[in-house]
Image (spheres, rainbow, N blue to C red):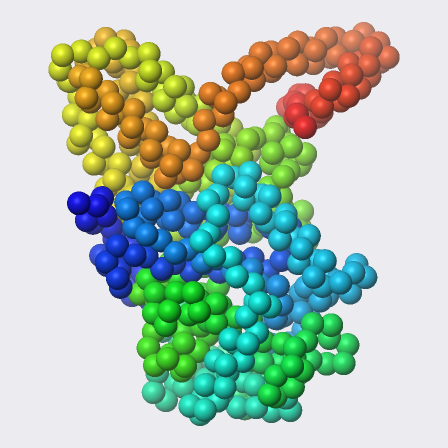
Length: 493
């Protein structure tokens, strides 16, 4: 019997607003689609948190024995600056500003996206399609929707007729909005005169003469609508109906709402069984924004080169920090939170690494099987990673009790304890055993701290030549010193 047949998963479905028993369309198989990045800039930490949540879901489903086809797209065209179908294509704008080809922008930031996710120890998706690689499929979907009377062409652009659709199907089922409220709250924007109604959204946009990215279609040389791309790619690789569609909370409306409408219009049914949405990441109690400076890039966490943190943190510590909050909860990114997570993460690794030193006895005074099921119960409850982590620390407590002699464990239970701690920490949460991988890190830290103290003494004695020499020699060895209010810290290249 496969593990998934023993474990009863409940998933919070954004459409129903409730936790539902997870039942796949095909027994033993899961089709999962997650909206990927628009590759016009470095991937930001909020996106990383969303993708990390679904990496954990992917890992757990695979662990349970499901055959998972995980599709995460790359948006490399068609995502305009404004959700109301106005403004410039984000990638084309970046290309124009930097005077390079749009596909150079795409390549640069796709590479950055993959590099960052690799550092965070993400599993690659089963398929990673691009929007520009599926123009033909998008055109065919548009033809079908037009034939069904739910889209119309004006001056070379094609729009989805939301009011016509809403006559037979509810538009707003996911975001709990109704068309009447949308009409009441919508103001007419410049550039929307081609639409019958402001709520209608673009399936195909005619390219203006200056628009760089364009493809031929029956209606005009133009480009597809952002919402349409995901419908085309998800249905191509997962079918007209599939199990899970994930993304950030900010995509619920209008992006995912429009996906539902398109798929219903084209195929006659809701495309997805379970809609899952990860919540937002804030920093120091405020929204992350480049404009206010309340912002940090993933690489700045690893290097420590940012005013919001006092030291560098490993990708695994940052991952552990994010997984300590449930994926549907708002997470506040703070330096104090990272410091606490680093201590907790090291305590978890110390416990796991000391299991091999434990001696088995004749019997167990701890119920390891019941504790193991608690770990599964946490993940079965809508992938509750913070409860799982609390259970893993309970495992660390057992390890320390056995070590101290206040508890005993049989050989079979010791093997079960080690397997459970290893599987849930590394295979499911995706953490890395950095303590085991780098036994010299403590020695390095001690040596550098000694040199930092010598440098501080030199500066106090106004021996700036020696102070600068220590700093420069360390830099030449790949160790960067960072002076701050809390003292001097270091990062390694």
